[in-house]
Image (tube, rainbow, N blue to C red; front, side, top):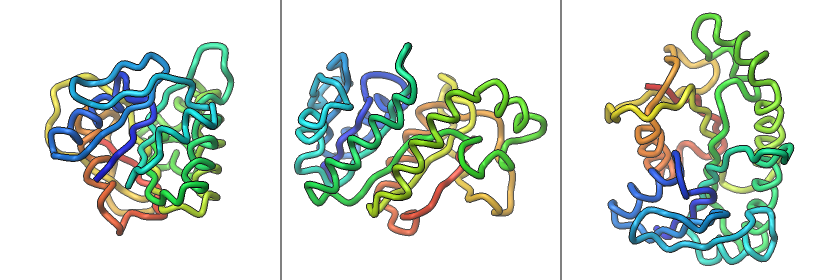
Length: 203
């Protein structure tokens, strides 16, 4: 596939770009810094700029949004996601996967133990951004999947994960290594059964 990663200079996005390239996909990364894993095509620019985003998604088979927040910029994730959705709609690019967060939408019930209340209070502002982001995705008309990870770590990957919809049997744990999350996202990109679903993901 031709995969565009929006926000792939570090964190989960960089891991996803690296894994996708190693798996034989053609990968392009859009980030403000223009940094990306070795060998990956890069595009530096503002991911809320329509022309920049249009160039990033041009010709893609799938787009992954993994952007984080930006200091002093409220609802950065939502603004980027709206720009990506508009560019994809204009160019007929259908497959979209977006990294949100567990606790967004109706997913607080999936958080283990007292983490549900703690997360809603401590992460109120980021979750508001994610909620707005998710609304842009679910109303896009695209072939979308929302990924809601638990706490992210830089631990060595275990090579396994759990991906559950709200109401599914089973429990999610409190964290997941970024590389395992990236591997999960890469697998889901080509899994048509996940279209239109929001999945909580943990180790």
